Length: 331
View 1: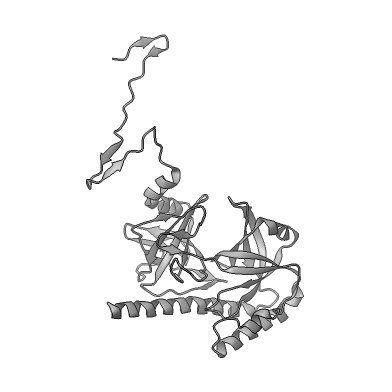
View 2: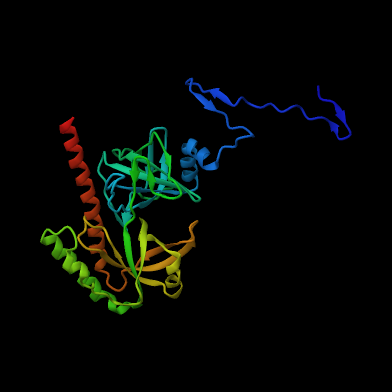
């Protein structure tokens, strides 16, 4: 029994749970006690529904994308940043993906890959679009929600490869970036970009030829080029990841000329002007920068950019439906 000491009554003896136990299903599991604390990332993986609930309560967002290939050699995937609007036991409702203010329509039964991020940790899961039922909940504005199937399994991405799990891998599109020196030189370059893409589409080309790859694109008056990765698209802008060695370009300029590579669905990179909105340093010391698309110098270019992004999304949906049809015929 506990005794009396100079400091008062001894504390009661600690009760340690057994190292192994069986859950309600009869599965033998290891207890996470004082001697073997469960890592935070593993704990969150086991409690992924709670993490989704926290995102909902805080107005957080997921990133969703249409699969473009397997883990062997995936094509570039555009990630759409969408706010979580509602959830229940079987469904998850998020904002409709959009680009430059234009909603990207997704059909029913389309397979998607979703990314959930908390701090420096990322998780991915497979989901599928569901038919719409009720409108978006109050407080969500006029946005019409996109209903998704609640996942059965959520898997954590390894730090070495933030966008890969055992059943999927995402390859981020590359972006060529130039600091924009003279904004008045933008319209001519955007008109040339539009003419190039439309000509290639009309001739049935699905990518750059060796001759066109060697040719210099028509550019406005710009500074030295650097490269980045397209991390996500949302609202009227995009998020880029810039290597730390090129961080100086972000300090010297606020306007940039971008070329987004969405081949083979769009035969040539899409050119667009963007204004730097904010930056922060990630865990690898690279720079994440949020940019807002800027069409002030050539307003008509907005619709062309939207049309090409819609073409990209439509192409992926058609490809998925065709592959699904082939699989059903084989089965």
